[in-house]
Amino acid sequence: MKKTIYMNDPLYRLNEQTDGGGFSRRLGEIVERYDIIMKLTPKPPEFSREEMHVLGEVLAGAKISAGFIYSLGLDVLDSVLETPEIREALAKKIDAMTAAEKVKMIEMYLR
Image (cartoon, rainbow, N blue to C red):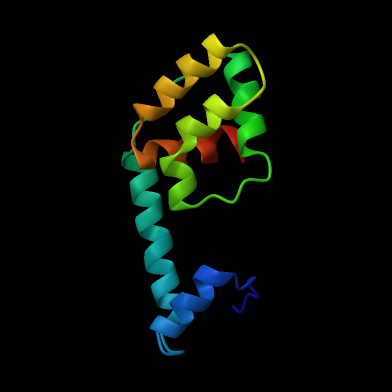
């Protein structure tokens, strides 16, 4: 069965790495491994309505990258929504999370 997919920058790089052959096989392996990581990563903490408000603003239109995941707590602190106390508590929660937990949180709650 043939499918058409949107070729973004990471997929172009993957295509170059596979020299035009084995692209779909390699993409399938990556998706399988991502699925394993998501299944084995603990569920993220629960967030209050106010925390979700801040997270929604921080993630709205954001390009999810390694740098973004790494600095997510700082982005929460820079938000103008809710109180400084709520933002600080949320940033501490996020900073205590692993990169995989942050990605899982984005997948579960906000995408």
